[in-house]
Length: 396
Image (cartoon, rainbow, N blue to C red; front, side):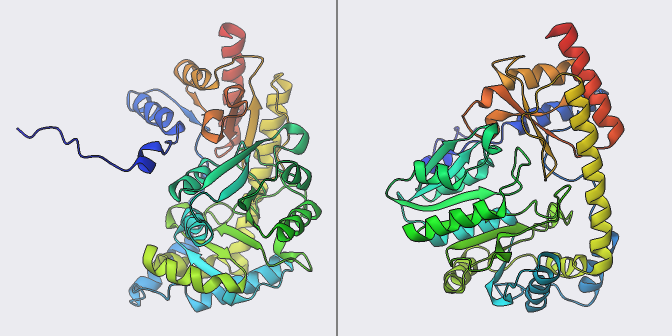
């Protein structure tokens, strides 16, 4: 019988935080296996499958033997098509040579931060924010500078907050518009003010736009459409959310041209190239008929947002900011509990409704917030609100 392996792993790996919601998801799946009915509002993934035209395009690519490595920066045809997409969809002039295809937006973040950070460099971000942002900085031995944000700023950084919290050693500021977990936006003049201030400080502005396209009551926007944008802005995007291709693992970076050689050689070493079949699928999803189908899905998400938000507010629940994009509500549960993680656990066991505790997104008031993903149908969303309301009235 072998002795238990006690060989060490790295300190940085030991320090990485897991997604706490995955524990809830595992328990929910176990309850489903026992026959319990569960309503899943915890995972940030569209419930729609990728489009049939994507499946057909990938099948055709495979049948034609297009399964070899692409150039590291991506299929030239896809980079050109994305450039045209920016022009037609966003009225932004983005040269194809500035676009780098990556294995998902997470791969894009890892690649980009590897290109930018030296050990001990600081990266400013808001709290709450997408958890991997912190972990990628930690993996590279950088320092995370978290700035607590409130509903008064839409749970977003502002140019004023950046300046207020500025300190030596900051290499980059990371923002997301729309954001996860709150679904709020940063207006374009504010983003431009951030970029200009950071340019004066010799620092980068990294803008996560992976939920762009999924915006409501307004046109989709990108910071790249701003005239006279300084050359310190880098945009991350993905085919996962608006384009509905989560499992295909394909994202991209739009970077200043001077960064492209560094990103190219790093990508060669980190992953060589993004998945080839996925790139052929992406070529197809950028066609006008596919974009029209995705617009219909966007309208469904907007309808879900409205119905869920209205139902939650009618039930007396506190949603500090009505989301303007993505597919999340950020629920303030401070009047119900001071332990959101325990609340989510108890809610799941008693009602079958699974939501994400704020702990996954940071420390600031995380014990008083819960994220709800409206990535399921209207009937389930309304039933979830009914069950939550009944649970709180009876047991809260």
